[in-house]
Amino acid sequence: MVRKTLDPPADKKTDEKNYISPAGYHKLTTELDFLQTKKRPEVVSALSDAAAEGDRSENAEYIYRKRQLRQIDGRMRFLSKRLDIAVIVDAREQKRKDKIFFGATVTVEDEEGESKTFSIVGSDEIDSAGGAISWKSPVGRALISKEVGDAVTVHWDKGQRELTVTKISYPTSS
Image 1 (cartoon, helix red, strand yellow):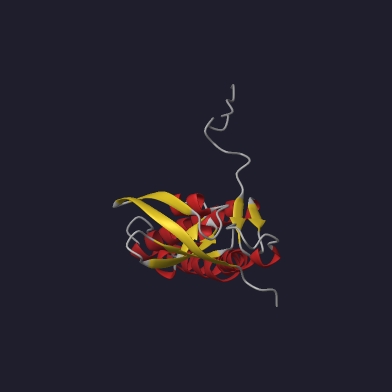
Image 2: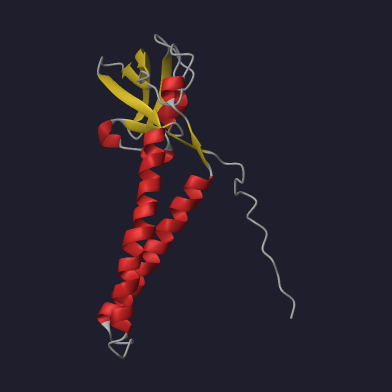
């Protein structure tokens, strides 16, 4: 029997980095640890109990626990892959505080004079309601390396908007 090996897809980025803040890294590792040490063992135990009840084909509890276990395993694989390529960036150590880089909190003003504040974070830390945007997002990419007074044009869902940087700040060292 001849065994074929599949090459990774050509568009797969093997050198991709997952920039993340120390707090974001802690959040992901905490979730992975919880799934490994608490949640998965609970589900495996409940699955074992459901399997002992007999006919598995019509056992709703068994089917539910199998699905739950697949979801947990999938989430653990995802988290492990994200953590494997994680590069922790501590914004408190940023030397150039006059420019926008990863970890900066930026206030911008649009053409109507409306101000918005964004924090530039990693892809796994996005919280659009809280103003945390990815450095890979259209707004994040446009703002990187800009200074106070610089204007950028960004493509949003409602069309193009011009944003002017009015303030840049970084967390302070404790």
